Image (cartoon, rainbow, N blue to C red; front, side):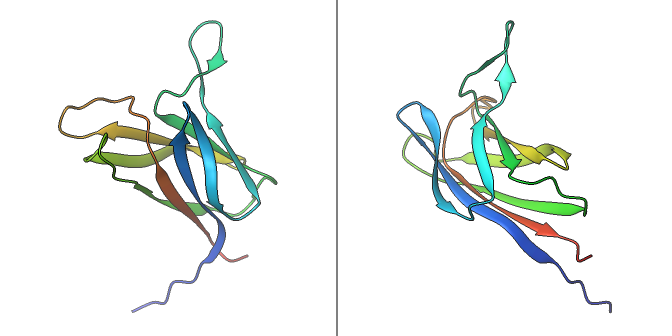
Amino acid sequence: MSEMNGIITHYGRIVFQGGEYVRAAGSSNWKVWPIEGFDPPIRAPVGQIRIDFAEPTAQPYTVLVTAGRNVNTPLMTANYGNVDENGFVVHLWETIADRTLQNGDFSFLVVQSPE
């Protein structure tokens, strides 16, 4: 059995508060904002959130993301994609009603391969 090693490089908790995504806790090497959407492009809170790294990364990484549960979103689910050296996008949705653009809280952790 092989041993896997990784380094936690970024982590945080984001809350949806007052109509926007707000950093609640975490490392200081990232920022959060809604993705650009619509025509002309604007940044509206539509359940797809961009996490941008302070510095681009050259090493591969994996993201662990989990949705926060609350009264308004009891079955919230989260996944991630659009991964590049500058960050990634978190997608939130409600599983039973299949509302794909649901706002809510989530936490994430980035594990990077050692150099």
